[in-house]
Image (cartoon, rainbow over all chains, first blue to last red):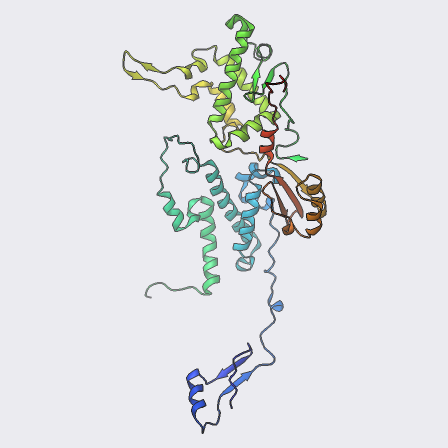
Length: 191
Length: 236
């Protein structure tokens, strides 16, 4: 009776589908030609060995942010006493997770991108706090300025287009992200 | 204790001097007639006949200035601004600058009484709007804009904060101040083990390798503990 391997990550079937197996099973004259190959010594490299110098990002602190986000410095220079500090910490965490150092592979460019990302988030954050359109206020005062909801359509398309920091971030990071994701450049249209 | 209002700027409580006194009922500073005379060189007794009248006028002036400052805020941020105005040294100085300026402004044509005018001319059937911006002079308006008074959101986090180098130091502080019990402290080995409580928050900042404690109920406690007049005993 042929052995039909169903378990194990290192055992592979050769020239065999489930239908073939059933046909062979019902054939009393079958030579039992089902084959499996088991690799006892995987040739794949260990996960630890695959780590590179880019897996650990450089330290990114508040003073690195000031280079690009100097407009926010008065709101952050008291560090933990600043009202934006917790928001900064959260956006910093998100940036370090979203913008992988291994994708950018350049320290200065990586710092630039992380700073732009945080600055974009903080600008949106301050816009929420100001709430000039009174969307989050119980104050029903009608403001003379027109706050159009149409602007939110930009938000749904690509929220990075909402701020100048975001546009700069997206224009720099999108080609990198596309390259990392696809691994090649695609040709659009006929040529 | 580190406060979010920096130590050099922090007042434990508002204080009285020869220039201004604090009105605990309405929670605002009120300039004194003598203070305005000394600092702004305006003798209000001449204008208002008696010192009592002049002081009542300054009480109104104080209310107008505070309401103008609060007009820049969303109502939900007014309480934190009130706390800041009462506990900041810098704010106290800026407030008196505005009081002095408005005392001068009111001696000129109109003054803040313009803001009280209806602006209705029934003979001509016309209405001229006098907004709250007429309640203070252009100079006082600029003082407002040069400080945090004009920002819509309170730009200073007034929550009490404390930083710790080690997790054990943090736990000792939490136990001593009654945020957690000794048993909870013993059971907590890492930050995530601390019991959830909406009254405080603890963050770990990796690049500074320190823990930041924040008392989220600072403002609420301040409002609860503020000086209140007891009408039964006649004491504060």
